[in-house]
Image 1 (tube, rainbow, N blue to C red):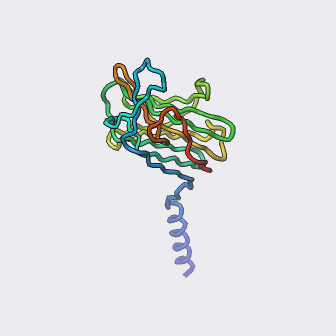
Image 2 (image 1 turned 180 degrees about the vertical axis):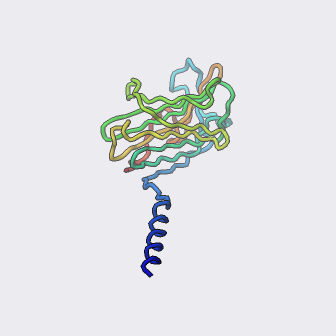
Image 3 (image 1 turned 135 degrees about the horizontal axis):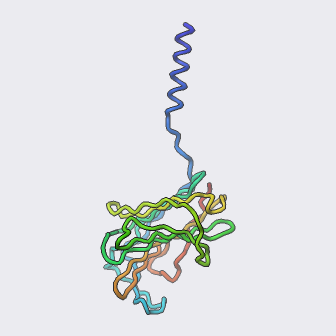
Length: 193
């Protein structure tokens, strides 16, 4: 009898040890309007942006931000993402109670897997090891930012979007607003740890 109880206890302990526990995270998802990409010439004033509803490349249609105990994960989903042309720049503006950080994922010919960097509000480089994934099948760009790089904040607010480029023009879509990139960097709600 005693041996049976010990075996049952050991089996229960093993089952608990191998059962995966989900990490708790506060999450916010947002759907952005399709067909609201803005375009302007490289030399034009920012106020020259106009809507280009035919542009599907880089047209943000959704996003998701999760605030985990050790990381902040942010994903941008677009209608189309390709390994052609001059590439794309996906940007994340991460606001905390005491700082702003810009996280940029740059994809272009020769580095379609992307290159990621973090900068301060005045665009000074911040050394930080950020994981990223550019998924051309699912049309997503994701970053996983260590909370330590953000000062271990109680909450974050994230703005995000994508820019794509032609020979003489730039297309932009802010994932938080419809057809108005002059308000780029519009933040979502506070997402708590």
